[in-house]
Image (tube, rainbow, N blue to C red; front, side, top):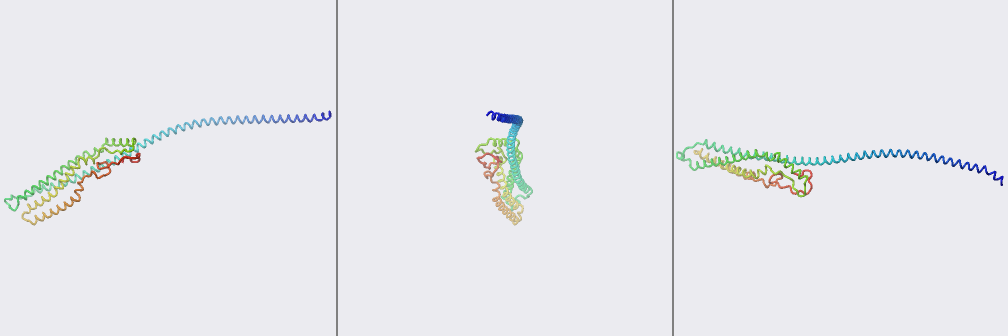
Length: 321
């Protein structure tokens, strides 16, 4: 037994030695791996701190960028409001320019209308006066073939023609001077500024049921309220003076050609035919021209223009038209 025990002791020492060597190797390996891990962890933590520093810089840059974007959005909203206001102003100015152009066309139309009646009245009245001055005839007592009643009729028709045409011409001339002097006042700078201001207020303070603004004053309303009746009066005097002028021509023919009844009847027949033609023209065009235009329901800024109606939606595009 002692021999056997002594034989196993080297074996046990060798096993312990191998175990110690293995433990030492494993401990050294564990220490090396731990050191390597700690170095890797330290390097990772350094990279993590560097990444966090970069992330903080990025967040600062991102905050600055968001601040700049916020400022840009504020500027964009401000620009959009200014753009909308400018578009509203442009729309209002476009409608105002259309109103000014319509006012100019109305003034030109009425001016030509008054000029035509005034010129024709002056022409016919001048013919009657010249014929009255140039016609020569003697005392009916010396020439019994000339009836005194005919002379009276001729004198009366001459005076009537001159009176009608003169009044028509003077009235048309005064009205023409008035509209040429006052026509531009309806599109003055003050009127434009007031209309643009009301259009801007309408766009920004719109409520359901509000009607679009219109210019307070216009030449068409002035014509309807101040000039229309006088114009129709002047036109009626002109239309009444034309057949009287034809009667005057007939009377003049009987006084001028008293020695030729055929010539007198010829002139009278032509004057009668001209009177019928004038009656037909008056029936077709005279009443149409003299008819009042208020109540025709035309769209525009005049008295006859019906309101656009209460708006039921927010203004868009052309809210003032």
